[in-house]
Length: 214
Image 1 (cartoon, one colour):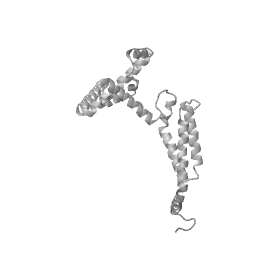
Image 2: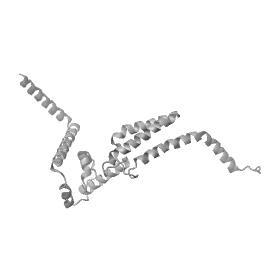
Image 3: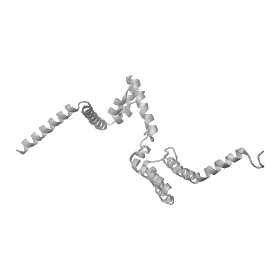
Image 4: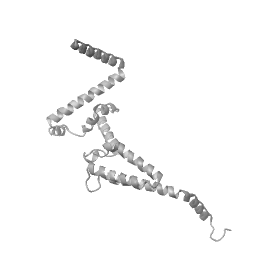
């Protein structure tokens, strides 16, 4: 018979508590570090009032990270994690805040992947082809302008709002993009012919330069 105040479940609970106590400080540290990421997520939330611009969000994040570095100096592990977060934001900061100034631009990787998936599904419905990778690679950012659900009249109405000079400029950019893609394709699949043509063009350019000097 067990003693008064003694119970099998109580003994197990006490044993588990003793095992947990050495990790209490570590658990508290991980909770504190997790809160840093939660705070940053709140700062980056585009739906939080008031409406944000890329400049205001960038400044708010910079201020938070600067304060985080300052108040984490008392703990070596906290400081290491804080510096890693700081360096990560500095590495990706060039494109992290653009979404606040461009309506409809995906903010996270998940949103971006979902958007690309929608483009692929729409192109599959139009062409009937299962693999649309080449279409995405070839047209790049211009693939985002294709709306499979758009009627011809809607397309013409949208194109009527485009400035002629802007259209010609973008068409030239697309032409150069397709030219680069064609060069990369030839170099990958027809490398000997591509290099031979390149050498011939180089020799012709050198011969022309020499003739002009003489």
